[in-house]
Amino acid sequence: MKELHDLALRCHDCPLWKHATQTVFGRGPSHAPMMLVGEQPGSQEDASGEPFVGPAGVLLDRALQEAGLERGQVYLTNTVKHFKFEQRGKRRLHKRANAAEQAICREWLAAELREVRPQRILTLGAMAAQAFFGTTFQLTMSHGRWLKLAGGIDAMATWHPSSVLRSINRDTHDHRYQQLVDDLRAFVAGPQ
Ligand code: URA
Image (tube, rainbow, N blue to C red; front, side, top):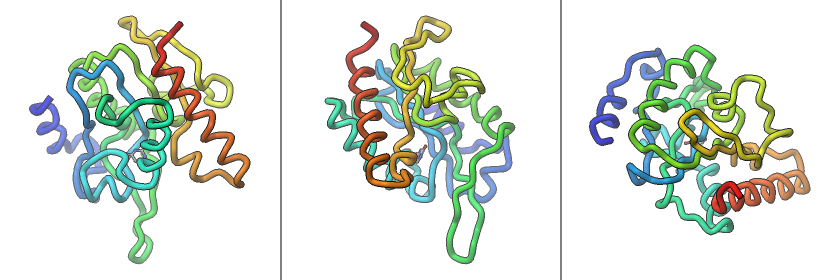
């Protein structure tokens, strides 16, 4: 895993490395039975080199705790390993990685899967869900449901913590947060 991480730090396979500070590779036990896959690093992750250290990470930690899980027990990674942004004055505005950038970066995710060999995978947000379940996958319809991946891995999709944070009002926020916690609980319990 260390070797893989070092290689990823030098990745120039797509143009995103040029403006990002560093590659944000996955973290956690190298043979964790559970893997969580987010979308792409934000500004704080770019600065620290670790996934989910910004506001989305704070919410994720809270939800994990409510579901009886700790970050240190899971391997936590992203679909895309570099921060993509648009500079506006001093601000760096998050931009979604395009399909080509996502496809190129999927090689790293595939390598992490081969190394960690998790029994269960939980995807956070649409980008990660579609990387595993295809581009027609819809979170609204199918979050919280167990699916089987090649190799017998049990997988489930849930909301991205950022989408909870971006909710338009308090009710939507609370409802979506509760769905995230419920999905995490189902994920911890495993397929019944
Ligand atoms: N959002 C993600 O999908 N991943 C991170 O690491 C941070 C925010």
